[in-house]
Amino acid sequence: MPDFPFFHQDDDDLAVQNAKPKLKKPSLYRVILLNDDFTPMDFVTEVLENFFGMSEDQATAIMLQVHTQGIGICGTYSKDVAETKVYIVNSYSFEHEYPLKCAMEEI
Image (tube, rainbow, N blue to C red; front, side, top):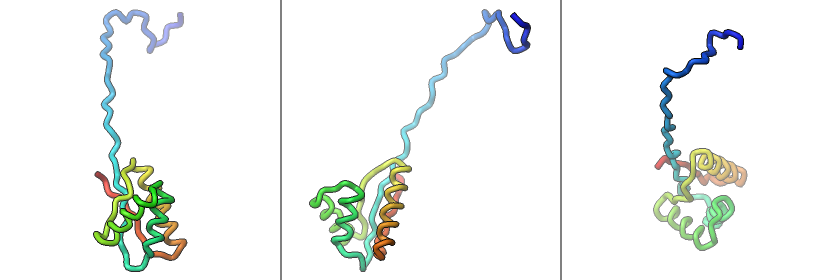
């Protein structure tokens, strides 16, 4: 075998310790809708049904929470999914000329 400086045939004195990876659960984020005085309630319900997979009853309950309390939680997601949902909802609202805003917050 060729004599390479980085290759050793005698590894009897080598101590190997298995390293356990330190895994951490990814952070979760709440996606929220913010109330405004111009977006129709049926549009908010449509957004909740189409982009968050809610039933009509669930969407109506969240829409009423947004309307009465100023904020409603649409769901909890990983960072990438939450960012995507926020972007899609804000783009959709803008395209339909409504000021409805969607945001995210770390839990």
